[in-house]
Length: 320
Figure 1 (cartoon, rainbow, N blue to C red):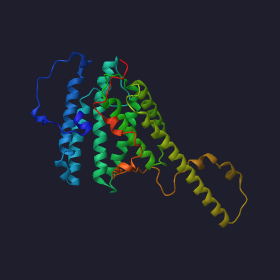
Figure 2: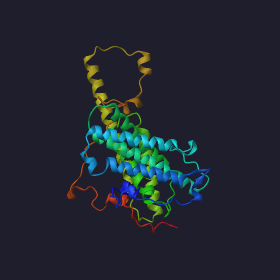
Figure 3: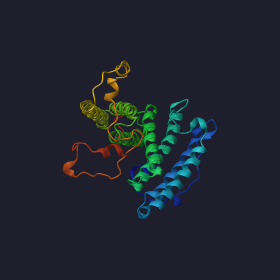
Figure 4: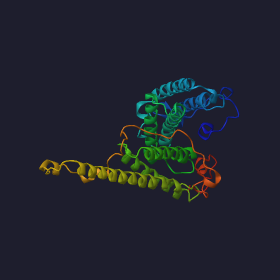
């Protein structure tokens, strides 16, 4: 799991690793073994690493990529079907104690990790092509990122919680949602996405406080403010454009006295939140080409975002 999350190459191939599965009575939840299920999920991660994210995979054609993605997704769906309905990946994490909650959350995260990875690869490989498959991938990517941020309420900020669960997955999901908001400011779900970014900002603020500032997660909180200001600016510009078009129409049209119905239908609030011109409210845009700024162009020279993806982050500052 760690190699898949942090882009590391395994020292030993997965098929060369094997041992008797130890007995773990504490991993049973109502007769369901969460530990064995976790191992099976990690096996799918290893398979995805080999088929999609290895050096050899970079030589694949678009069709080969899509076929491999479909194969991994079939394995993932079968894995999800093996989980009892009350524990399946969803919005809620129902458990009787902290350990059970953590065990269930790990299973949910494996599902989210693979969904995000498969969808982003799908969009990257497909490029700017107009394909229903890519539209579904974008929508799934958006919904998965939203679900991860909604589930941050179940994450315990303790030294025993792995860094990939505390920082890596929430951070990735917040950046994905931020990209969707910036590239789709007039989408019908933008207000809801902004609310989730606010929730994520609160989570990262709590994370920095819980770690006694050893995890510099406060920088992530700024993305919520940036997105909110950007959307507000876009809506103000759209309102100005609509008002300008209205003045032009009134100057060229034959003046007629307003009727009572026309006056009653005037809604000043709707103008402020009008959609941008020539942009569909349902179509989703997501950046495909990566941008790698130079050393002199790095926006925050005193902060390295890789610190939030560091599997060896010092946990000693967390209160025990």
